Length: 222
Image 1 (cartoon, rainbow, N blue to C red):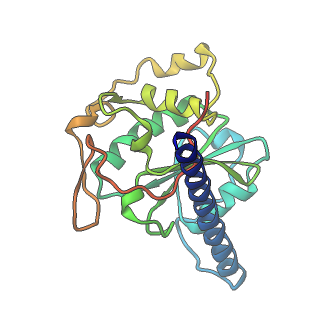
Image 2: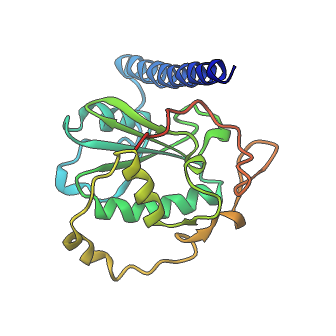
């Protein structure tokens, strides 16, 4: 019976992974069709930058998201942060990601509003990672990957993203420019004191993981 239960759980996880991948694939295909029909001239559209421009968390719309994922160099990891500007948790995580973007210059960080991504607020904030145009990691929502009693800091997120092979180890010499950065309450807070201000009718307490997650990829095995 125990073996059958494990097999069933494994099948359910694989089914969730497939649903997640299918959703993003349909979304990308839909956006590509819109662009082919002319699309819209958005001021938020993010043009393909040179490598020296990376080091920040750039705001993009749907077209900018496609550019970042499909037009970045094949060996570049593209981190897409799906955010909610009405959520304190989302804002705090964004502050941490901005620090990581400055440290990991070879990784491209962009943020996309959950409405533009056509995702439900319950799965936000979320993080997707791409390489060569293919998604290899999906943290939906991010908070499910971090222990309740951990500090929400750039170091916590950095270690988590390394476990997913999203970020590589950084030479300590590259950290010298970051020593002057002072952490504020916006970038280092206790999980148990944060409340998600989602746009749904029922608020979710961050520490209790009350959010209902969208399908996410499997946890790393290492």
